[in-house]
Length: 112
Image 1 (cartoon, helix red, strand yellow):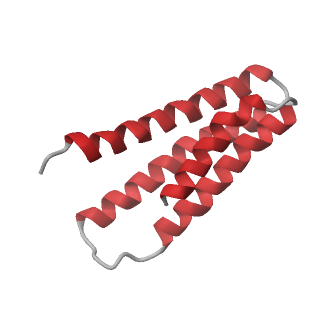
Image 2 (spheres, helix red, strand yellow; image 1 turned 45 degrees about the horizontal axis):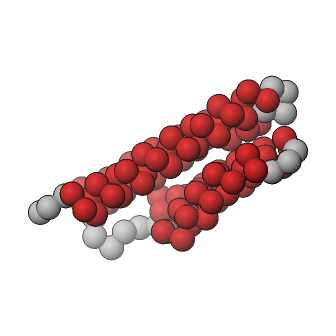
């Protein structure tokens, strides 16, 4: 799952570097498609150990898909308005910052 996250991160952050608005929109849509495929597998596959961790993983996956759905919505509207692309890109960057912050917090500052 980590390589998928970094792939989505790279595609989403690099989206404004493309020349045309259409390729920018396609980059954001591609990042959403990758997230949707990865997290739909996470939600649909049964976990070996049930319980609170299983429920938390599913909630986290649904939260990520819901936030990335906004990115897809803004990217789809961006064909008519350029500001919508920037709104979608900003929401993608904010979600990425949130995920990275949570990972860093859990990795380095959460002491059992």
